[in-house]
Image 1 (cartoon, protein in one colour):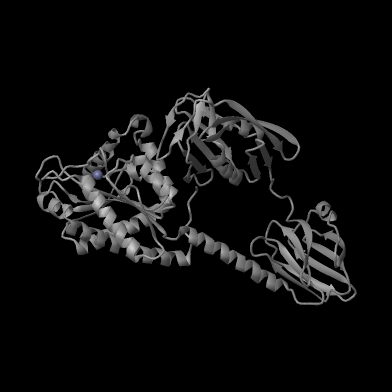
Image 2 (cartoon, rainbow, N blue to C red; image 1 turned 180 degrees about the vertical axis):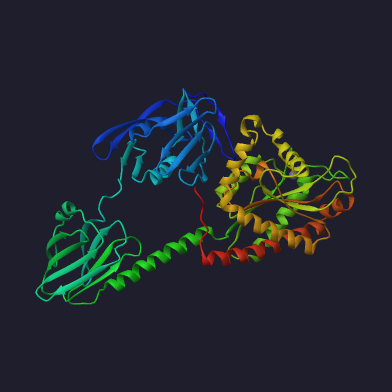
Length: 525
Ligand SMILES: [Zn+2]
């Protein structure tokens, strides 16, 4: 029985209702064996017993009670799952290189057993296991089909009717480089494939249809010969390799003109469309602007009593307006547009839900001793703080969590290990975060009379969990008289917004240019 608790880590809200009850999923393995896996249901979804699943596919696992981790080998990876963590660490067994898969919900350990969110773990499992895995939520049926490494290079032949002829597909698990075709006028088509093996039994199951009347298979030590008896109206046979797989395509032209070449071109066109879709997915179409603090959390207080929350909102709204006015196709999403308290975790959640492609958190710096001469703007990337100052600033910005109820539960201290995982989860965006930070710093330094204190790194909670390039900008010091004056005035805020906007414009130009040549990879998640 799970206790009704609020579990929330790295921007993740998982209220578990009090009405959970254990249930089970039944299913089949490889269409023959029945299987059974324990489930936990809550209003936040369904969790399943990892040990049960590993048992079904006969994978041993080791549980470490001290570190509250479970480890197992899957494919070429050592997988490590930690209790109450949304991160799954994958370590490549040969290279030892690690990557992180981030779930939206966390792993739960109950009674020594590990439960994982079903809908989030199964896709990863399927990919690494190499078979097919599906769960029918309605019937609560789990279907697992393993795909053992093919013992033969050629596993079958299929025939399809095409507009003006037939298409034979020779299913191949490796690229068939050396293929010779010879269509004899008396109705025999010889296809000789060098350096390949064929599953003769499987090929015997080929059902002749259309223009193909018979298939004979000859395996020699160095090659496979497929001999098709074809109907006399087959005038030409052309071969090509399927650009999306290793399959060999043989187009049989009867009276009219469909050729393997055309088919290849069509498939290439489909591949292009998919790449375009992938690029569209990454397009810089949503920018999330996060005005720091708000409501009961005033943020830092300036020399004359000005509040950080008002400055951040002023700059956020002005920056948003600039984008809305002059960046076609870009939507602005605000984490707040009024003097409202918004929890830190909720800010990245809003950003992720909106499909943000850039997250800018806006803040002002301040020192306890006021007035102070310390000045300058800084742009931060999410990484363990390097300098004493960076750590102090992060600690100050992070301290706002005390305004949130139950924050101790929600934000686990960012231990070193946790931090490595957080930054690994962000590694696919880091390059772009860095690029934007550099361009924004350059633009601000050029256009403002605020000293450039550069791009730095620290552990800001508000950036944890953002699934997009993200930075935190400290606009300047409101404990400094001159900077407070600039930051509090509408004119000053307008200038800052303009400088940030120019940084975004430059970033967008470079980003979309990069996108045209290649789609960024999403890392391991
Ligand atoms: Zn702040």
